[in-house]
Length: 625
Image (cartoon, rainbow, N blue to C red; front, side, top):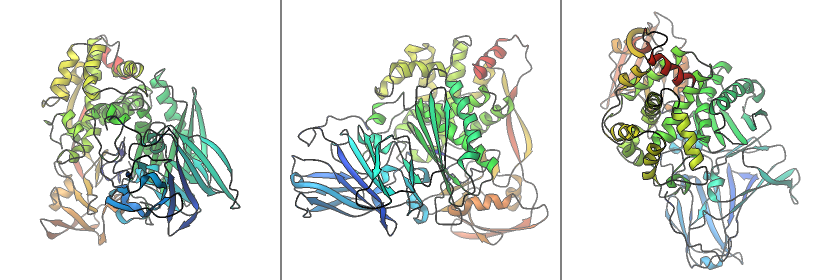
């Protein structure tokens, strides 16, 4: 789901139950949506939605409040203007806006269509808090990032109706998407204009398959029956699909080898939008997965090696979502309620296991070495300590949109992955190394599949029935219970142990763990709470929670946090340093000399054990399958 390169997504240099429904239409018929990407005025796209014939006097039209994978309230209705409803004679019907995302329409039996205009989120200061990979872009004749939940709404009780999407677009722009076009043809009225027709069986399929229109810069990768599209938009031509393809091909090949026969996905799309940091453009760097595609947003100024590394880390996570939630998911996801969402309690699986696989496959397929993998595990353990470790993970997951649980969202990628690791090790121990969590996910995929959701409360009993009785105790104690996971005990099963040493760090990042975070509500940057700061900031007198105002005379916030991280890489030993922070409503100034920061790092390594010991055998089975 929403895979962020930390919560700001700024540090990439290194995210409803089915109810009985009575359809309002006489017979099932498609909801027809028209979007005009040609006649764009004031950076707004006109959308028309024709729902077919209603038999009820009133209906409600919605724009999503939230969408699967984001775990946040984004209110896409804030980007909608001038919504009107018309009858079959072209007369306006009475429309009442009941909240930011909902419009009540009277005389619905006479309703022919609704029309409205959409603003894009990338051009908004702070993007109104919308995570960029789930956001939208409208740049006439250049680029349209169509995360369709930001453009296409739905009528009450019609989300299970088929949809037809007609997109009028300039001839020079082509669509990058996993949604297969049913037809593309020249527009009969406008010259040099094309109309693309897309069809979907229900509203979820529309919102689940984003489209990026731009001048073609694509590459295709064919791997073991899967065709992967890499579609790139680099506004200043800094990067291209051709130069990014080799690393993507290497990564996806390794992932397919890791998954083996589990994955049957035929088509997958990687949509990469490279933002210009010097403009009012996307600032939330990271990715958002969909069932057969992922949208990635990164800064265009990243060097190619850093870009490739970020793509490997981020896209590998999103790619593994083809396993869960695509093939294994609950009713809450399958019948997602976009405006009154009911969240599943199994984020440990959807996000945690996915994040775990995104790291495990790299050691399994020899993309990284043992020490690198152990380092990632120890970093996750240290990072997870910043959160309340006694909150039942299922409770946090079910209430992730609410206070105080939403503040623990980032821990999904830390402790969630560690739950996956611990479960994997336990399964290896119980099976004498023969099976692990990948085998479990394979069995779950076979039992359910993409068209058969499960009830939330049935998943863990099903897992236990497919594995061992002891696994019930694991879930009761560490996932549904309040007991922190004793990582030392689990890692000792595979012959690993912890040690501590002093290391040099970057100024704002320790390995892959940042010292700073951001508040999207006021766009401020602050030193994270609950962690130890490095020696440089400790000596200056900085405290956790201090809000950064200026560094060496330049002002910083979320929008230009990437610039701060990049600038710090050029600081020289002995240079003057100044910083102003806000603490408890007062500004405090710091002055000093630059020196290389240090921090204590907890490391994980192999114990000295005989090669034929059980722990070594289990470690080999764990890491190499």
